[in-house]
Image 1 (cartoon, rainbow, N blue to C red):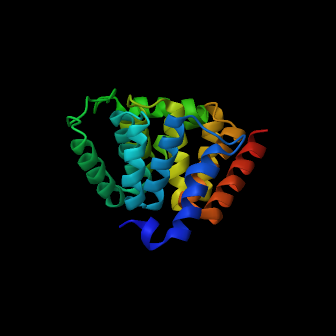
Image 2 (cartoon, rainbow, N blue to C red):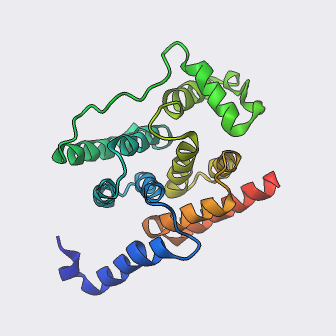
Length: 230
């Protein structure tokens, strides 16, 4: 459906805001790959499957690699669950095959089933500090978190650790109701060099896709994390 025909006034204002005003706001711009990673992660978080299809095509046209796009989708499973992610994986596969991208892509795993827990714990410590060394022992959920979330996904190639922590921030901000985790991951981002000013740029680029309430909540979490780390 061509919304420029059915809803011309709305489309004019929406597209100007999302694709021009926000993207080019002075002091809030991001490089193309970073902005596209943010948008894809945000659309996964808010379950915007139709907009995701549009955004993925645009991201690939602007130079985001298929590997980077797929890594965003894979990592989303730990924060959204496979029940919410599978439609996005199917959509991405369809779009990539339409573009004659050979699937499966080259493997990006760096851990084995034997060392995933150990490597996951190391990754948690890198992001959140030495307090995470023994956290996996607190419960089976904490063990799963270390081995599965961090050992299976955060250790993969294709994205840097800072990029992975950034997209996690976007997953949490976009789905809402995760403010404690969002504040924690805002702090994790800062520990990896994604400072307060950068995270506000990230939220700014997310805003057209998740609206003002969740964006303002995310900024509050950023401010709280920055104050705690000051």
